[in-house]
Image (cartoon, rainbow, N blue to C red; front, side, top):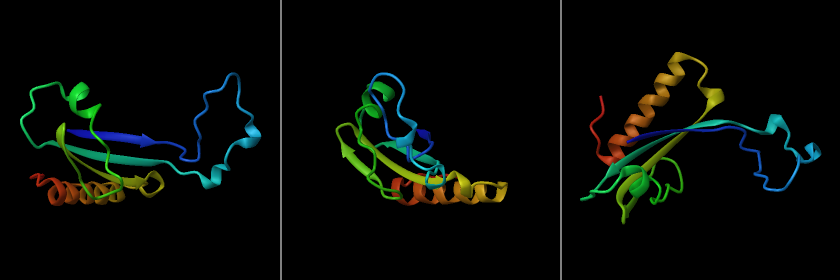
Length: 114
């Protein structure tokens, strides 16, 4: 399974209070970045349940980029590669990012990808 995750404005802190947040506490926009995380999921054992509710909602995400998180319950391996969106401004940069992710899928999950 392929998961594509956009992390916009990493300086944003969640807010669960009531009313509007005080804008004076917002992080400087220049210090914030947005990123694209690509995650590859591979079922590694017998599993007959639903992927979303059984695997995806209960598996642990990898701690960092490029190294698979291998789990037995549920039987799944997950790997992530994150790219700064500012570095994906041209077709060539996007193609290099895709190739880098494919390499991670091959190395960490043993997947055959074209």
